Image 1 (cartoon, rainbow, N blue to C red):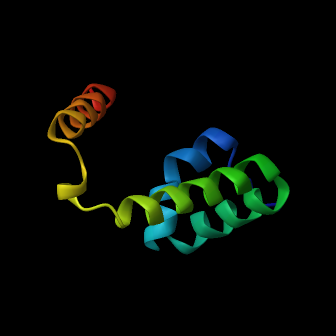
Image 2: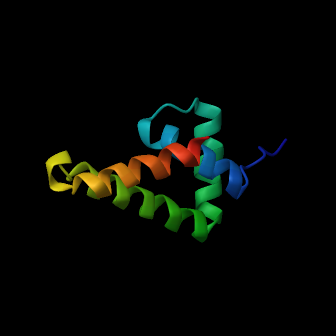
Length: 80
């Protein structure tokens, strides 16, 4: 029986867990299969990795306090 690959929406939901190495083996395999078949999701993953690397280099003191607060508000609203 052929393993069902993830669709693009499922991959997006799992990308953080994938990068953290937190997926179970079956889900990781399905994730990798989807990446092998979908250039769009492969590009998304690379963009996500690049964003994480860039944000990891920013110190809180580098941000203007008003800008920092606007970012926090935007993400807070996004999660609600």
